Amino acid sequence: MGRVAGSFGVRGWLKVAPYSAEVDALAAHPAWWLKGRDGEWRELAVEETKVHGAQLLAKLAGVEDREAALALKGAVLAVAREALAEPGAGRYYWSDLIGLDVVNARGERLGTLRAMYTNGAHDVAEVVAERARLLPWVPAVVRRVDLAARRAEVEWEADW
Image 1 (tube, rainbow, N blue to C red):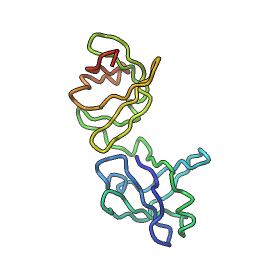
Image 2: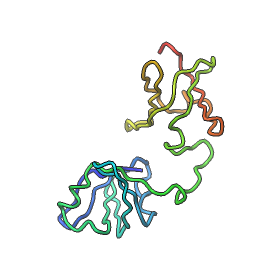
Image 3: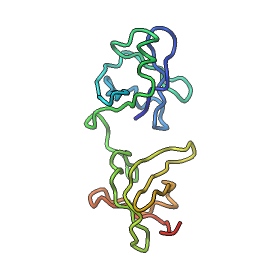
Image 4: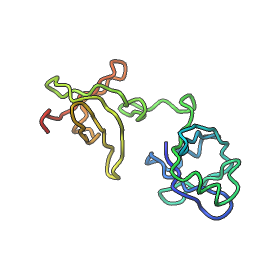
């Protein structure tokens, strides 16, 4: 749902870059899971948050000073799946899209959706088969998503 971008001040506050356009979406959760440089996930209680432009400032339990906050820089943030609301029609959590089989309108398989990114303007899907492709994840390209069938149909030619 985001990543730790750095520290803020000297009392252990974190600058968080959320993956959502809704900057305060993480603020609603009382605990976050952090995946650090060691690859291990750990749960930390959220003590306080504040919206700061396009970032979220957060004070987490056990992170008491600037050095502890800086040690978390680059950590990936997540929340428990059961804590998330169901997305609305035509909206998806990125984690649900990973692993989808991607085909074009002609039924040609383009590959497997390996990752999702944002470029600031829109979301981008990384689709991998014999080569990697970056597809804009916008309504003009994404025609249909069937999570039950683990398949996405896109308007994209195989030779693009």
